[in-house]
Structures are given as C-alpha cells and as structure tokens.
Length: 250
Image (cartoon, rainbow, N blue to C red):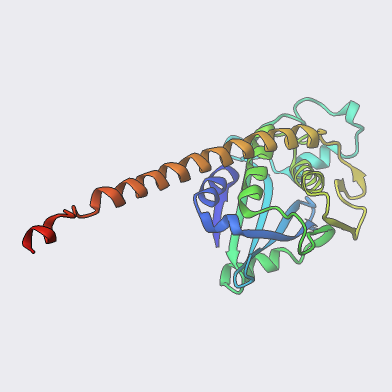
C-alpha cells in the first residue's frame, strides 16, 4: 500500500501516462463511528480496459509535530459551546496533514483499506459508463488543489469534514453526470452537532480548472518536443544513400 501527501501523489500520478487512462468509477464519503468521528473519501479507480482496479483513500488530518493535543480532547471542549463561545485557543490552527493511500485491488494493502472503509458510508458518487469521468490524473490534481487552498487544520473551519465535503462537492460540480446517493444525513456532524466548515467549493473548482489546463498544456509541449526529437533522430540515423552508386558500377 502506497502512502503519499496529496502533492506528492499528484506528482507520481501525473508522471505516469497510463494513469491518464484510469478513471474514477465510484466515490464513497465515509464516517468512522469512533469518538472523533473522522470523515474521509474512498475512490474506486478502474483502467479503461477494465483489467486493473485500485482503491484510493484520501483524508485530512492534523500535523501533530508541534501539538500533542488530540482532536477528541479539543472537541470535548468545543462541542458543548456555540461557535460564538469557542475560545481562540480551542480553535487554534495547525498545519494540515492531507494524505492519500492507494493499493491495487486484491493486494494486502487493498485488504487493509477495505477494513478502514467498513466505516459508515454517508454518500456516494457513481460515474456511469459513457459519461465524462475524472481520470486518476484529474483526481490527483483536485486533491492537491484542495489541500493547497487551505493549508491549515482549523477545528471550526477546515478540518477533515471540510476536506471531504469540498472534494466531494467539487467532483459533483466538475462532473455533473455523476449520480449521487445519500445514505445518511450525518455528514459534517460530530455526535449530531453540525460542525461549521469553510465554503470553498467554487474557489477550489476554479483553481482546479486553471491548474489542470496548465498541466495539460505542459504535457502537450513535452509530447511535441519528444516527437520532434524522435523525428530528427530518424533522419540523423538514416544511412546515406547515393542514387548513382549502382549506376556507376554498371
């Protein structure tokens, strides 16, 4: 099972031409039933020919390098109060730790991810065959853009609920043919209490479109440059032929 930050995963995936021909088949927005009630996203990705399938999980965590307070401990302080009564210390931001796990279907890593994904499924997005679906390239860029949009984990604005909601809703907006099914109304809630999140979907979609366009243009430039090199090498390596050589010997 591979484990990357969202930015590194984008580099790895964008560097693999085959990943451009692998598409997201289904997205599941999960919620763990533990004390923290963490939320994350699961993606089923299938190659165009259907021969290869992988499971990808993306989630936002809190970088604990400079903080030893657990999210559950902070929540125990925040939840009983209204947002207006939350103290700044309880809502202090910390660097976000956004990660991606991926594993080929049937591998030991995929089995571990399957256990994680037994968490409650809140909503799903299904991309019908024949519709415009996000490629692995496009998904990697959306995840990286979302992470970069707000780089901090803020309990009352940009926590794991925000990350899951923003990516999920951005996919709905960017790929409108997706079919959404709602299994539970508990998304973005901690023990039934709604947790506020920053409204970032529109901005993230705009940032995604701009970055995806730049990456496509860069890839096309590299493709053309590589093609030009190959064509030149063919002419340079071609042996000289003297059309009069045989005539002179005759």
